[in-house]
Length: 199
Length: 350
Image (cartoon, rainbow over all chains, first blue to last red):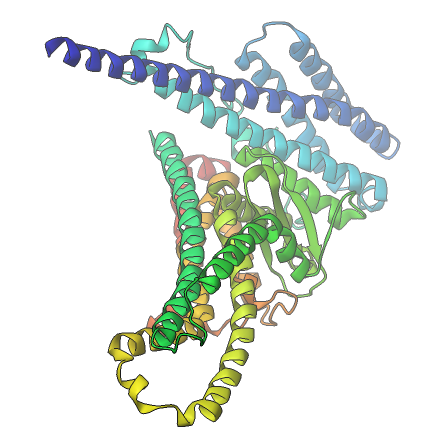
């Protein structure tokens, strides 16, 4: 009798172990997938920038530094993205530089009504706005999933199988730049919004 | 901790929707079985005392035929539900976006697909000047989102995003499965009951005409049970469309609040949805393209808006949607809470 009871308890423990292990692996894959989403969008942003810069270059002779800052930030961001084994915080830092430079450029574009009226620029603006939003949402999804994963692997009793599942805390994408945190969207559909003054 | 809570909440909601859809299928088939076998039973009781060479109803033909019919109808509704809902609204699919407005819509849907972590649904456009939107489909992998021209014309980018996020909430919750299936069934039952009602009226007149002079002795041994059964059976035919419509009402109101909350979670911008809902509410023309049967799928009631304006017992009972003012108020409260939380940094910026 006692032997059967022991067997039952053992079976329950084994089933629980399998369940917890699979839950952790599932979450780990979700985190990896969420990160891939960010990666895709970042690459898209990097690809869009030369287009934008070429289109606005002619009309914006006086804004050389703004343009150069965008190009420099882009090159830096690409370099970081292509470095193998780069950490989340390094990517975040490089990309937030680029976000800052880009939003300054877009604010400047606002003050050139002729330029904005060109169909091409309006299209590029929409593309860029959308890409910026996608990056922001992909980051949001990544952070949510990673938090869930981190919480799960620290919680008792799941933490007992954390080691077996090879679980380690996923690094969150922290928003380091204060300016970016306050104004995350580059939505230019409201013409009345004054350009940001923070540098 | 709150993320964990949200994910279990979502999981529960998905599970509840799966379960409710299953029950709906079972109830639907059981109801038809009752109509069929009930009819067989009544006929059996009626013909039991018939002379040996007259017709006796011994084999339950009606039951078998109707139950099979119901099963086929349910399977058919399941398979073709989404495409029928889209077809009845006159929606056309955007495959490659044409022009700035469509590009913006496609971009916004892609953004929300990323935010909600589900594959991008197919996008449909309805040529109607009244702002409205709905989602349909059987699961997140095969979902559709349809918006009207009016929505694209009246909403800003942020508001459009909030509306699409609300629809994504329905998709992610699996609300679309239950609601699409229900829409298909409401349509099927309404059609069938109309036909049966006509046949019954004809039949009763026919019966009254011919059966008037039957022998009295047989009527005595009919018994009260058969009479009660007969009344119940006839009533079932008549109330079927009413019941399915009531189901459609009850099913959709609570989940509008939930989808609003999910929209806020995806966009982190509840105030945008609040202002979008107000715009939709104040465009007072009814959405003529969207028919009664799929009203419960929409973000705002496409029929009369009277019931969604007022709060109260009557409005609660007959509206497919909760009072708009209440939804807006809840979203506003969410928005202000968020502002308060971020208050310091916002003030520092100003």
